[in-house]
Image (cartoon, rainbow, N blue to C red; front, top):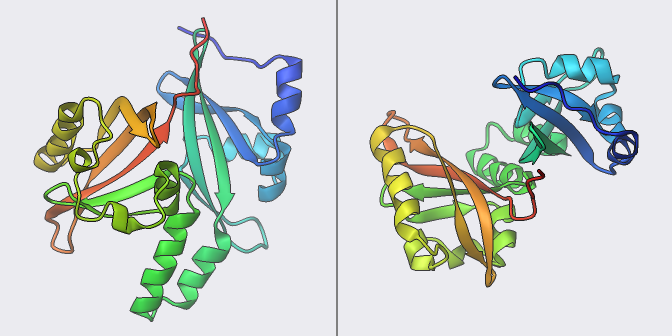
Length: 235
């Protein structure tokens, strides 16, 4: 069994001073355990390191709904990248404060058109690329992180098209098979593959899940992806 990973003193100093909201987990025995958090993250949640570690006792949370004592509820959306360090597996998660967007959603909850507008703002605030497709695997939309990653100015560049139409997978059949399995098996699937992004071959990890309509029928796919090209394994 692998033991607990420890950063050296210099690494801990620089990571603690990271300007964003950063939490680092070690994936050990199937569970994510906090091993470091940036000072900015601790200050944002107004917690000590031990308190924050206790908050994440059940592992990594992609979306945090946090209510401090005698305080207002805060919302944080996280983006996760996994890295191997010798025999350890580490998960680096950066969070963005989306509290203001959620508060707007609450105020506009009686206005359906307002909800659509705010939902879009929430999606655009999440730093991970997110997309959704219909039952024929054609794009219905994507958030700002997805469009920015591919250099698209609007959703018009992808709506109504499949991945094969876009021509960005060197091995499109593998990706197509994963999506067809998501639809037929009604299960979340993960795919790691090469992808052409703005003319460069990138290594991405995509997570895809079935999208359901109000009657509980599968109506499409919702997914996200992370570019892991720069995450290098260390011996």
